[in-house]
Length: 403
Image 1 (cartoon, rainbow, N blue to C red):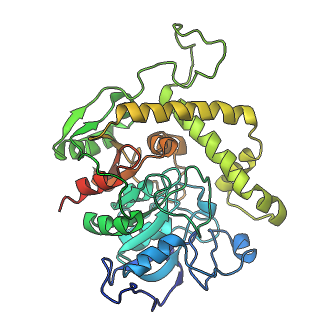
Image 2: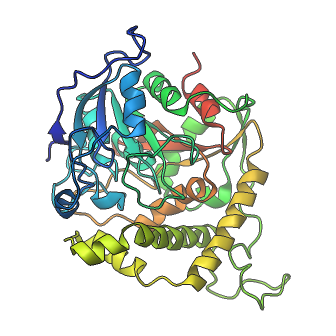
Image 3: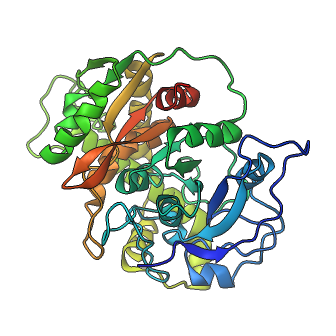
């Protein structure tokens, strides 16, 4: 097992501008090694990145906010390489410990931050979530986590992966700390939102979930005490095929046609990969970094994506945005598992596609996603994910911590 920290920090810079105790006074902060800390290098999970970039001149915006609120940085934590993995296993730096599931991965890419919080070495783990990198580790480690609405938390001073999907959020052991830390990062809400009164737990998505996970997580949905609606999320069997010019509106899908949720996942995968290559392709070609097998294969695939694929995927994305707007009005949240099952064993190949089918709706629509501890499968934690309309972050936090 690997220590979650890349480097420990003796942080004497935790203070707020008034000299008064801040809302996070004394809480220990672990910072994912995608965020700049003034005077220290940012490694992004890859030794070659570390070699080719100078130490940061200033804190990343999210780090500065948390420090100003009183949080004390205790270290920078391992991330999967350039944040492009959901497993939590770094080819160069190892697998941070998951005390909730010994011998199993912590989930990624915010693996070290999740591990540090789960081990009690930090109270707040600052991470990023592009395709599930806060929600999946939260599920695997039995933690609380929030992927905020896209764009609500500044990513200035953070290494990107796919900018139209990237978000910065936190992982914590309790709902109260999650709410305090996220309120610091979110700032003032643009408008008041109605509290949650209804959960959409669509049977077409729950049918994709293994029986054991469904049995473990469903009671947590009911325990929230809200009205539960199981109407399908995708009510059009042709969803995702709309970019095909010869499709007749009333014809049945062809044998072997891609199911709507899988169509959404594929669109997410294409767009994420295309953006990742735009962000890092030039550096990869110039610096020739060594990547672990999974990350290497994903970047190789990303380099081959063409404009036609991107155009088709963007149309599917627009369809998901429209569905979220229609299915998740004020007072409603999507309720689905945060991951298809508990953490895989170290060295076991995860079912990345099954994971992304559960996480891609929030990513494609820019919506906030809250992960809550929900239950156990064979004594291993699994989480519940609540997704609400963009801008509804505070509504989700209030449900998790109503006080």
